[in-house]
Image 1: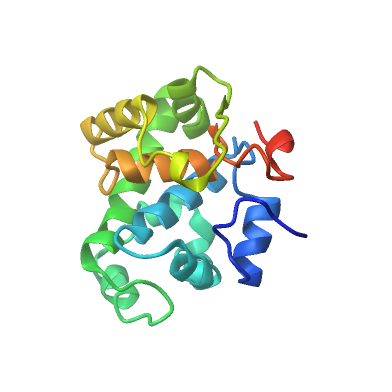
Image 2 (image 1 turned 60 degrees about the vertical axis):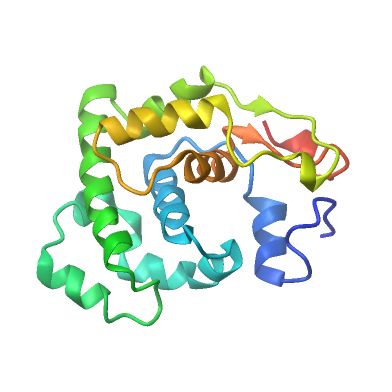
Length: 187
């Protein structure tokens, strides 16, 4: 499929992600945790790099099961740091464990991670009307609020820019350009 957003370029994996997944509202807790973990891993790197490592992340991180990841011990963390298929950054790997524990706490309190995350947009996607890639912001008042609230709960690697990227990937915001064929189908 063609795309009108431009950012995927001609990379087949990026195109498939844009055309079928980016901006589609996600409510499943495991899917939301996957997107959060991958956006955490992206900090300082390109999304292309992370997307091309996604299958390795699925295998390394028990298919993004927060209950399993929350129980990782130091030995498991050390083995992950030797895995060439993922970003081997100690702080990012450790944050996956911390963030999984935070997700479990949120599930206990709110019933689901999705119920908690979607409250930052009042339960429905924000439908932006960007004409060019330059128009798309790196943060928003909603991502600022999400970042602040998640940090207060103990999450790591959840600055406002990461939260905004997470909101884009999970469909809390529709940042497809208005000229993109996906725009009417997302949020």
